[in-house]
Image (cartoon, rainbow, N blue to C red):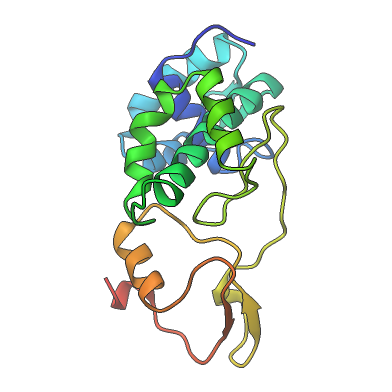
Length: 196
């Protein structure tokens, strides 16, 4: 285990992981977009993460998480998703509101509190949005999922997870019953941009 990581480092690792950085090289522009910052700001942090052994970084090309980087990213992801589930299941917050709260709280969760949350919640496998929660050892279920727009009109599917980065979309989907576990039949398509 590496020494205590700053919130900023944790955010970078989580973002790189969510962009697929455990399996592929992620560009600085992708990272900047995910974090909502300017691309030049990313370069300095990528160099620091590389020097710390958390990523393999090739300037001008991008970054990929090392084994240590994957482990640390999944620790943050685990805390984040446990907090989201606690906030919805125990405190009754709406699933559209918990991502921002979990962003703030994930950095303050100690390993002891993380274990207590997991035990209290029954060692859950998924967060409220259907995303897999990494195990305490860092294992993470990998699922081969298709996005709804990859289905043909008339096909049926079961929703397994939804993107949680837009509260307005979460509220919309929830209002239409498009939540994890829901069975749907594709009737037509309407671009999301037309809705928001």
